[in-house]
Image (cartoon, rainbow, N blue to C red; front, top):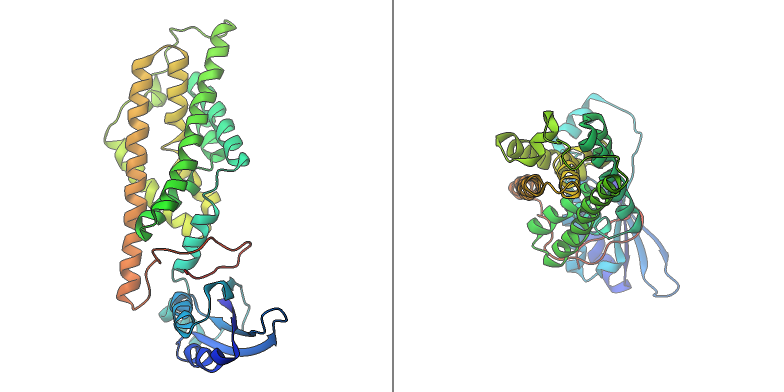
Length: 322
């Protein structure tokens, strides 16, 4: 359930209330106070998930500015009845809210210092995993890596036809992966100079060696990870399922750095090919997953992801496209 806040001019109030009343999942429409700086009247209401985007559109058609519209997610505890359980199942209370997905994509695509630090740490841990042939260290590096967020944002940008967001997503993802490779390379180079490892070290044994060649499993795992990662991003389960994305990125990136640090350029080139294929499959799977959901939403009479929208608000507050 979502709570709506809309600020309307006095001349817009009647039309705004009528527009809200016409929505199937809008209830408890209340007129509140008057903003002292603009003279606009506050309108609040409860909105079901499936009506958020259409409600935004209806109020904007009335003339309310997008900057004066927002919704916040709330978890309510209410008496449970057999009728309510059936109603919730039919009405689809877990419907995808496109404005919220777009908001999350734009909010999490910034190139922050913390993101770069996480990617560096993930590259170092994964490098030790490659060097020691340790799947446990590889998994640990995948858990640290936050690259699910920019990859998911890129998928949202493609479906929403927002090239600027796509550029920002790749502008965050690429430096992070490059930094992970560089961290692995510098680590291996320093260990070589210190005499701790040999340039002829074999890093292609066991499961680690699979990181240097593309096969059916490479494509299949990346496609499955793209679907899981996109769904996790939508449902706020990214921290639990983020490893699904990283399984196809961080290990290959670290392998490139380690192989380059050892002077094993064939292995580095093979791992680079694996990384590129994995990124392409992740992008394809995530975009298809989101596109299918958009088609389903349209089939049920709901709006698809808006193609263009303004920058997100802070906190958990979601705003409509301008």
